[in-house]
Amino acid sequence: MNKEERIKNLSEILSEIVEVRIPRSYVEMEGTSDDVKHLSDVEKAYIACAIDCEGTISLRRHKKSWKPYMAITNTNKEFLENIRRMCNAGRIKAKKMRVLCRAGSVALVRYCYDLIFNVREIERLLPQILPYLVIKRERAELLLRYFKLKKEGKRGKIEEIHRKIKLLNMMSRR
Image (cartoon, rainbow, N blue to C red; front, side, top):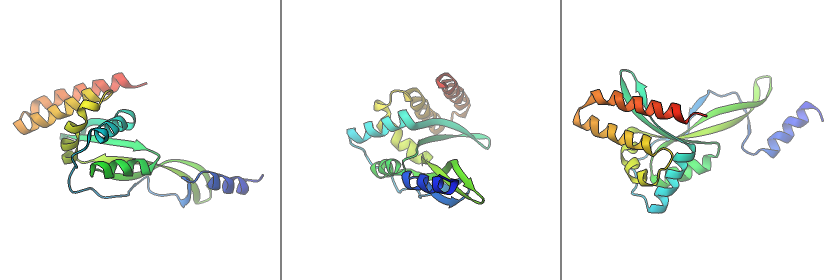
């Protein structure tokens, strides 16, 4: 079997892999929603499980301040769209995960998707799912404390929260 036949077989077998010109590394797929929905207990547990297993809860440096960040990453876009519809929050972005095969300027590319929540959505969604979080519960509690301190105007303690989240991240690395 020659190289062209192998490429053809790969594209037929792997439906999520598409033949495209090499794209920008990050492409926005969907916009944000109007408001976070009040979730049922089953929905809260489902989303918490997704965040525990495939998600990120963090504070990221943004210019001279800190910005809350929460996202779920997966190669299955439908899974993330389901969560997005469930909570009526977040936006889905696609990023090139890896190039499987390259022939000139055409490549077979596998995509990875991120469901990213904005600050307002995090502030409304996190208290709902907190009781169901296991692995990322400490990070979520620290982020909720960040929101409380920010409302009270105690910005000096935010650095301490970031250090704690950073320490948790370092401890959980494999």
